[in-house]
Image 1: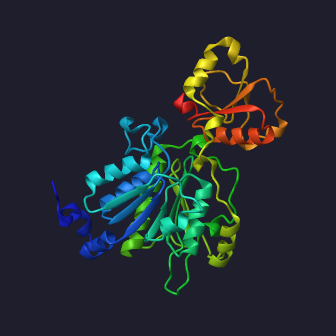
Image 2: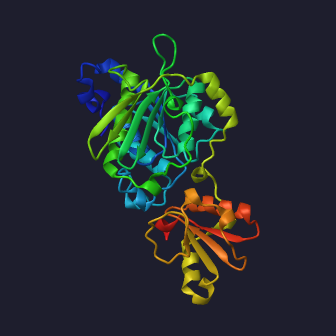
Image 3: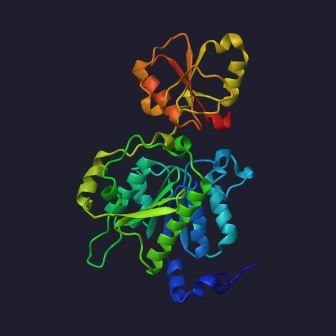
Length: 362
């Protein structure tokens, strides 16, 4: 079936505030969606279904079985496949008037300007704090609107940053709300999340994009919407644009925006789930292993020797035995790799391995 635009978008065009003029604006718009997980995947699908003409997806990760409870556009058959590629194919099957492309690698300080250069709006669908600040700072420097979304347990945060105002200035940005990047905020792997709040915040972000493109309604500029799904309460935190482009340009030069979860892991520091199972099956060899969990309350299929939360992990305070092999474990292998790196920096000659893919792959 090859529907016409009028057929496909009939219910939307019927809205007097949108009409054919608004639909054409959507068709002419280009959006960059960074992250194809809980937020990014529904954002991309809904934007395409709304008629956004060009969408570029960015995600370095693959589909994991633990994603499926909230990342509902992936299936069991997709586990292990690149998220951006899978999502791109899904969109192509249902959005004939959307040109979709993807980048299957992390967005970094080195490539961010090239990736945002030719789009109208950037949408933050990541759960990486360094990446959120990278997107914010790059968008301020390049005068790009950024639709921000974030999650913490049952709370969701939405805002539209850096929008050109009628007086020629730009609206507030992320650093007007949170000037410094926090170092102790857990991600979804550590804190957990409920699928309902993920979907709510994602569609709020879609709503912001549609308002900015069509110029209908009032976007969340100079304010941050905070919604709690348990109590069904929300508040808006007023923001003033005080951290301006000049200051952010200086910050950009100084910061690396490095996120271990987005980096390439050293293959020599890895132990696969299969290898660890073999090691643990031999009681004599397993005594030479020291297994350290770096997240609390993990449901583990084996006993660990120590549990040290990654936020309290200090390699210099760990008494090590150079005759042992240390294995770091967490849910998906990101925080455990951070711990592995810290151990290798402190004890270069110590044998330290990261459980590849974490417990979810075991």
